[in-house]
Structure formats: C-alpha cells, structure tokens
Image (cartoon, rainbow, N blue to C red):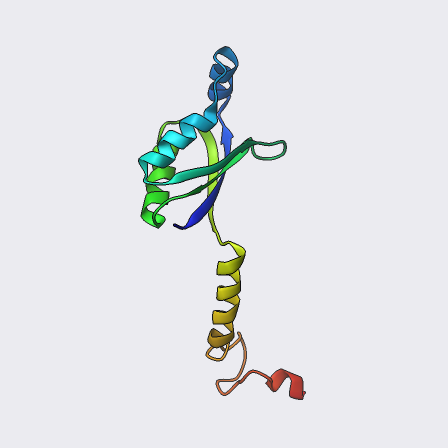
Length: 122
C-alpha cells in the first residue's frame, strides 16, 4: 500500500476543546485511516510551524484524497499538507527507472538533438 505523511495544524477552537477534554487524537486518526482502508503507522505532535503529523498507508491516492477531504471537512484543522513517501526500496527502484527516463529527457533550452554527455564535451 502506498505510504503518506500528513502535516497538520489545529484551529484555535480545536485547541480550546482539547484543553477542556484531553484525548488521544491518534485513536481518532487511526479510526479515520482504517475507515479509508488503511493503517496508521505513527501519529506525532511537534514543535514548529505544524502542530503534528501522521504517517499511514492507504490503498491508493483516491483513499488518501478521501481521507484528507473528510478530515479537513470537519473544520478543526487550520491547514494540512499531505505527501506520498517512498521507502528506500521504492526509492532505489525510482532511481533505476530514472536512468532509463533520462535518455528520453531534453533539458530546457537544449537543442533538439541534445543527448546526454554533450555538456561534458564543451
């Protein structure tokens, strides 16, 4: 299953509610992710420009988008940003595939007959 990381920040209203009734937000996140057919791998609060992030797997990008819409639609996040991440095995396979793709790529401003190695010729 594809893996994602979502960074999020709560609204002031959400913080006020959590201060009145502290609860384990990882469990709420887990339930939503499982509802999308996925699995929560980690849920963290953090210091800095974001209040926290979650790492999870869901079946596909449609499930990830549905999860994002459902959580954002609840109105308790001021912002969220989601990224698909690759483990090192997938990263290596991507680099191997890039070696094939680079032969077809022409950089911006390069002549139509540009080929890899021309730049090294001077």
